[in-house]
Length: 357
Image 1 (cartoon, rainbow, N blue to C red):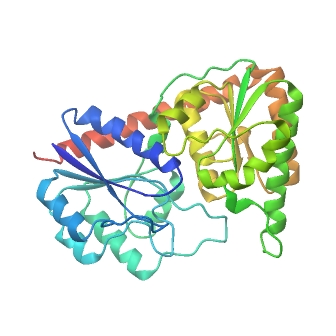
Image 2 (spheres, rainbow, N blue to C red):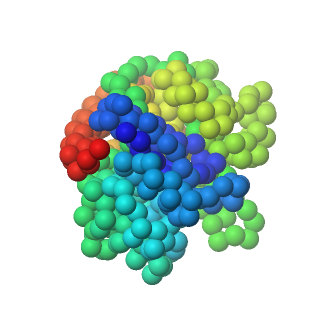
Image 3 (tube, one colour):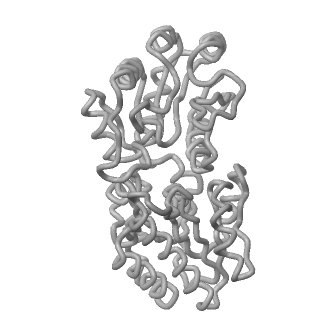
């Protein structure tokens, strides 16, 4: 069996965490399958090959695949949804199709642009044709309902890559994900003051960790973030961990940590999978949707609120001193993860039953 997986082609390694989670479950359901990756998009315009489910990619898919999977993270972000295809290509697809792990975009409340009419038509047409649609959170399911599309909330596939039990203990090593560089404050931009609070909070956190005497590292999910992270770490004689697009190296870094402070959503999701206690910095609709889906408001902190930024620092100090007080919170997250694991298993089983090969 050959499965064609259309994967977002971005510089953010979080998309590949999602890919790994999808492949893990596909190989459980279809153990003899060969998974072929094709680019779902190319927002940075760096590829010199066919992009998306169109043209020669569509021809290849129709010729050799028994299943098409579209799966990544922010593909529903408007105004153009981020899966490159068109109505004619969708109609011409002759292979069973499913959507897995998709979600709304990394936008702040009130800052998002609605999907344009072309994207709405493509989403409706392709999803009506699909064997199944699995989304990462309830906010995304609500978005699809406005388009008349039913979906199954299975959480983000990246949460199941490790699937380990939480190890809650006094930390010897803390791992911090660097905020995306788009949040670095710039003069005269409307977001300057809000972004400034996140940036200052990140700097305060680094100073606090240095004073704690505990081993700590900063990890970047996009190598371009090093441009602003390097000067921040220089006074401490440190360099960021930057494994590029090597997901195995990230997983090793997560597993070696006793506490993760996530300024990146997929850093937090992966920590959940690997059973590493985490604090999540909440800065957009995606992070808020994750918090609501996993019922973990107690370990989430608004990046743009000075009191919440201060609350994050206090929470880290409390965890360092008394980690056991967070045991119940992480146990609840673990239960939610297993709940979605079972829903994911049911979803994949339905996909398998819908395919003849």
